[in-house]
Image (cartoon, rainbow, N blue to C red; front, side, top):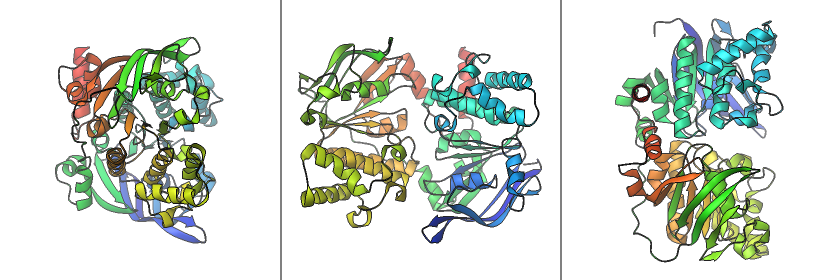
Length: 537
């Protein structure tokens, strides 16, 4: 890079408190970032990626401390600068875009009010701030840029909210912006829009960026250089094209080779399906979300439901579980219609279908030990008590490949992201269901942990004969684990069938759009895709 150095980090050490001890999180990290440059930071869960991004602002989370090293931003020593001085930089010259926009916005205030907060503190007039917000909303390709700012966060989609957060981060034209997994939870079509908007706005404003992600194909489109972290240490750093072409470290090569798992093709099912969704129409208030949705799930098979945000994937799950009674249609179990409202289903029926949720962090009660989290469903549905309950909990921990003696009395915060998701699986298995609905269970996990979860789910399916309904926007996951695929758009099924048939051309137009939106490990892929789509337009 020919631009001047904007951020210089040398021998950075960050520690986290564990009881009376301080344990290392980052161990001697060096980082140099030039003006206008984008550095991609990659690593699995616990590598220290987010800790590094926050430290670049001179910040450490509660329970953590920066214990050594130098952090210089545009010549300013952030470690020696008083907290008030560091706060004056944040939001003005250094901005941060979090992974979950929905959790980062204040739900009680309109988007435009939250956008204007920092500009107004710098002395900018409200009218000027609002005009610049509209300009940035337009650059971020948000619909109705003159009006969307006057909505509350819950009134826009996840992709729109993520772009609104990026616009808010750019409000004071910062010199440095830190993106912490900004597209992880987005479907592939929305992800393309957000990536293109982020890349354009960083280029147009000559802003330097640290782009934190576990998605190699995404970082290939965004970064000039890539830094690989593992357990708080740097493994390798190189220019993006050079690293993609010839990674040097064995760990980096293992990241490139991940997703080797693929479920063997299963024979065509015969006989009565375990669950049959028949002509479902359902929605909220007066609005229909699902329109004439029908598909079958057979025992021992995995049906993947794919589609962009708002297509109705999760609404289907709510109908099957009885959380949302349909307006028309029915759900059959073993050929018998289920009561539409879960409250009318006896426990013997309720236990047949269990869910694993996307965000294990919020799905597990932080005050309960793993013994109680896993034991409660076994106690409620199967009536297990005492030694029988203890034995069942230990059996389930062993089944999800966690050592019972080491884990049974732990709390959720003592687990990694992948381990928490395994507890979600064990909790679902505790009821001994026949169908498990997996709602985006790998989207928030790095690729190595994702593969471990997929292998575990496949092993459990083969051993227990489970049926899975896999709700996901990740087509790589669909290719790895699905037997059958249901493609949804605007609440309707646009295509369905065995995976080889759905993924083989010719595709339905919307399926073709989804497949073409999956990022590839080529730095020019996003540019080429946008050029082709613009040419078609």
